Image (tube, rainbow, N blue to C red):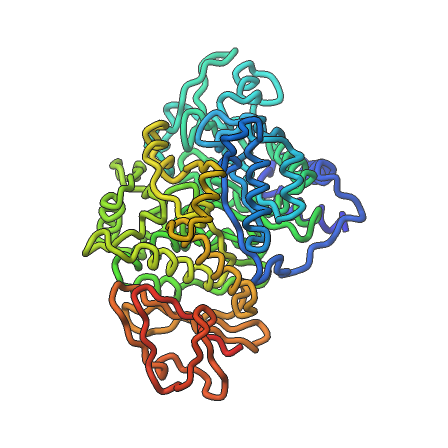
Length: 578
């Protein structure tokens, strides 16, 4: 077993590190991962998920117990998970819970510690016993206030050669990055001034994977996470991992080889583990991270949030249909992660080639009208372009492009999630979507950062009062989404790898067909994405005449297959033969 693993590792290591003894490095990596002859061989094209899998995305401190300030947020969160979501979600992604210096956790100071203000490793272990636990591996960059970076400045190990440097005279004009801040930043060290590469911010210094010691360090970090219950790894900003001056320094082949190396090590330690790559880039580039079913198990469907929001506020599903038809079915052993909102804003780069510039502008203007903010990036042409829209999803769907805010906000919001829940892939809910949280202007003003508008913190007592009040929109959102989740989890046709086919029912009706892998269940998923009542002729859907059809959401039975169905604004149907 180890001989075969070693050969595969060497194959990738030879490409990444052509000038060193890669056989020795492969053995170091295997040893660091504590793999031996008894390690488990992962199954080929094995699906580590099914229709019952639902992911929750949250910060460690999204819910606080202000009445008991000594109670750590991870304890409060676990109590909420156990009390409200134990039978709803199967996996929990807790965003970076390590000591950090900026970017709400994504500027890590110590990868091996839990932020003591959040809790401790025992809290992580407790949650991981009840849910599949997903953690970030913040692999591209590290805090400028970390011990490694202190050592970089002192010119001692560990850290001396751990960060990527370039000459201030280097040609970096081709570099693709999502920020407008300077790429190279001067740092005073024990042997003079050096320029470090900072893709995201001056406090987030890019790591130097050209040094194999950095790779070994990260394998050690992964081992530590697995020992503490982590089963799903989100490789943060991994597209930027390998840098070469004079190139775009994004999606380089060495990056793909490093992902293959990490996957081999992780899945030989736990064949049920999953790697998710976070690559917020145009759709075609994103798809390359599946590799040949040997890189990411799962990739984010980054085009879905902006396209779905545009569809529902424009009342036109043309672009969503075009995109859905272009999406290749994921091979067995790989799938998509479907989400509409996350801790970040709604990215616009994934709409390149999908929305026209005028439509992007309409979308951005509508989000600003609904109280959102816009973050910009520096384009290659030298000017700033909108990069992401910062807004809570509940407010993003409060109206339409033509009419502005209207009375259909709740229905539109639930419709968006009914679409996400039925698509090929695993559905992921940001906690503030599940709770119907609105724009947080106080937090935005306090931090001065656009993303804070969608990073609220709830007091658990107030939250539970809202959820118990059946008239509050928070309660309505939570109960309706939980009801849809419960229905989804029981349908074999909603397996993440079940067949999907796009339907053509006009511009105001979005639809697709799912069929279970055993071909014994079909579900026609049909949505009115407009603010007007719509009629759908059942003959256009092509229901199988010998089957009995029922809407799983409302319980309505189809008695006359030659008739029509009336859909109220933003109504969803899941017509099933089982």
